[in-house]
Every structure is written in structure tokens, then in C-alpha cells.
Image (tube, rainbow, N blue to C red):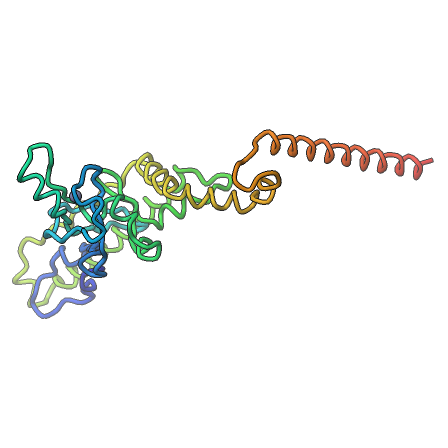
Amino acid sequence: MWFCPPEMPGVVEGSSVPVADSFFRHRVFFWRPVGVWRYSVRCTKPDCPAKEDEKAFLYRCGYSSTVRPICDINGWYFMLTEVLACDACRKAAKVSQGHSISRYLSWEANILHQLAPGHRAVFPAVLTPRRGVDKAIIRLMRDRTEGNTMAKVWRQVQESHCEEYLQRKDLYTTLLIQYNQPGKVTRMFSGQFQKPPKMRKLPQPRLLRKAYLISEAENIEDYRTQIMSVFGKVLKYDSTRKVNILTVLTKCVITTIVLLLLIIIIITATHTQCRKAFI
Ligand SMILES: [Zn+2]
């Protein structure tokens, strides 16, 4: 589902003028879980007439004209997707004014959540209302060690973007100089060269933070399972189904008191041994 542009030219071919566009192309990611993997996805509208019908699935209804720019670690790529529609909702909308035709873009959260975790992981970005952030940047933000702030991650990404852009611009300029060298036949044909495009502005740190929070919100269920797997034994001492908070708190308090007593005993013993040693 990735479409990569041809590599940047490294030499001047014949008398053809180097074109700036061939140095500043971006990748395109086309997300089509139904079209490519033949997924059966259901309509999520609460008043869908086919809500109870287990065999009613969304059908493909063309491609969306929306192009979503995604901020990657060293540049941008663009995302496209397919449009899905519900047949039952479409028929209901024809009959009554209360219903509307349900159309979904395949990158919407309610469609993504219907996919298997393995297929969902193939989706490379976290989308915000207008743009998106690649998961590679989100991973950088997960490291919450001291000094790893949102501003620091943003600076790192900006540096990588600038470096990549300048490298492309430098290669383009080098080829133009080769083309326009004194004494070369191609110099006679040289006219106005295409200007390199401006560097695409990096999103503000708050957009990265927003994407990070969206990503973490999706992981809440995993975190809950992890906590339950660690404390599960403690929580299930008294009841296997109902969590008795008071019992848990009492156990925590007793454990803390026992630990404190142990620490006091150890300190006292050490102190006594030291005194004996000095005497
Ligand atoms: Zn429907």
C-alpha cells in the first residue's frame, strides 16, 4: 500500500534540464483494508436498520478526495483512503428523512477498531483532524526519562526535516551547476531554472502532544490488562469477581507498616553494631 517515488537523479542526463519536482517528491500511503484484505466491516451507526443482521457489511464506494499530510521523522508523506458505505442506511435514507446515508473513510477510528490488532498495526500514523503524526515520532515521545520533553522531540524532528530538505536542495543545485558549466553545450539551452519548493512547515509541538495523547488513549485497555495481571492475585484474595477496595487498602497499609518496622529494626541493629565497633 506504499507508493514510493523514483529515486532522485544523480547525474545530468543528456541535454535535459534537471527538474526540481524530481528531487522533492514524497511517498504516498494508500489505506484500503476492505479493498486489499477483503475485510468485512460493519456499520457503527446506532440506528442502522441492519444492526441485528450478522451478514450486513459495508461495501466499497470509491475513493476519498481527502489527502492527509503525515509528519514523519525526517519528512512528510501523504495518505489516501477508500470510502465505505452502508447499503441498509442508504435504503432507509431514501424512504425516510430521519436517516442519512452512512459513509465512512477507512482510516476512521470506528473502522480501524474492527480490524485485527496485527492488521491495525500496519496503519502507520495517528491521525488528528487535519493532519497526522507517524508512529515513529510517537515512539520517541513514549520515553519519559528526565529531559525527554515534547519540545526536545520537536527539535529533533525539526532538525531531521531540515537536514533532509537541505540535502535534496543541495543535490538539485549541484546538478544545475554541472548542467550550467562554462564551455558545455547544455549551457546554450539553459534558461530559467525551476525554483526548489519551500520547506513544509513542521506542526507545532502541541499537535505532536495531541497525537501522543490519542495514541495513549487507544492503549488504555492494554494498560488495564497489565495492571490487573500484576495485582490480579492481590485483588482476587477475597473475591474472584468483585474488587473489595477496602480490603486492598487495608492490605496496602499493613504491608507499609510491616516494611517501616523492618526498616526501623535494620537501622537500629546497624546503629548498635556501629556503636559496639567504636567502643
Ligand atoms: Zn448502516
